[in-house]
Image 1 (cartoon, rainbow, N blue to C red):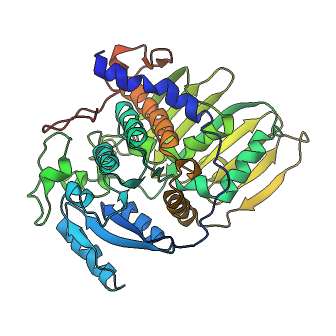
Image 2 (cartoon, rainbow, N blue to C red):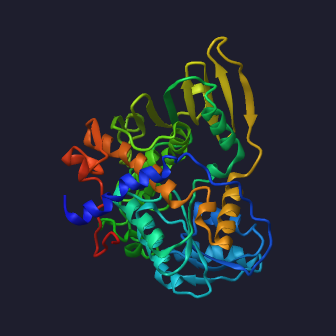
Length: 433
């Protein structure tokens, strides 16, 4: 392994230690609404969660939208028109570098496909902007380490869009897990069964739509003809740009598996699955997957399945802590405890009572105003930790092996697995150093 890659990976052990406590949430904090000057926000990637994040942030007193950026001028103009109806007139950009050079932007939202997150976040930090970046943080382990290094070097406030960390019922559930009332926890299950996700029909390549800078959209990804299956939203089912459900939903549910167990890096990972539901469709990532992470005295298991809603405990997503006295089951709707016989009392369903995304963006703006990253509910170190953890599962699946993590060297013991530590950049782009 070359020196540059080793330097990137060298931060892995430190990163894990800093969040092994992926565990500890920051002290309670809520922005009190006092305006000490406007916070001017620029959005890069205006479709999907980028747009949702901006609208949530605009609910916070004193926040203004001053810039929008997208490589698809159709989407860019559509969002600009929607904002104009609300008397908001941002400057429009086709390139993120131009937005970052705008002195009328204090904070940047990165809502682009996963393969662009690293470059845009590092550029934003270097430009002196604070950042709210969508999950998963990066599209490879090396990228995640580079992003943490950039945020640290430039002293920026960076929140990752894992908004469940700002919801009260998730915190309450973690308090219960940490209380010891479940007894010895030997297994944690996390899952996403997504019944709405149907087969992606194979489509022919076609001309690039008018108004789309496709070369720019590809960025560091491999050159390919334009195909609608690899564009808006569906990009996440192709290895060039993302990691499928393992990184799309896994970073949400597995995050709480690690928080609950106060866990850092696993000793080994094995994964099995494939395209079992839709073997002949256009997607590359598996529609069915089981991944097992080994720790010293417990295991964490991930499951996902497209086209099915009937997940464990009758829930289509969640995390379950299975202890000797009972099992705590948690998802976005709430949590409950199912006793093991008469070993403990049941805890009836505790329903979610707040808006996680709004709580999360409010937390971010408060930390920006205070210039204090320690106030963040999902700081970049935590986002990197769970993105790396999820990438480990994908690497195990793609190698077809049980892989072992050498924490002292911050790499796998398998050469094939180590080749997947870094995303392959093309078209003259390089992973930031």
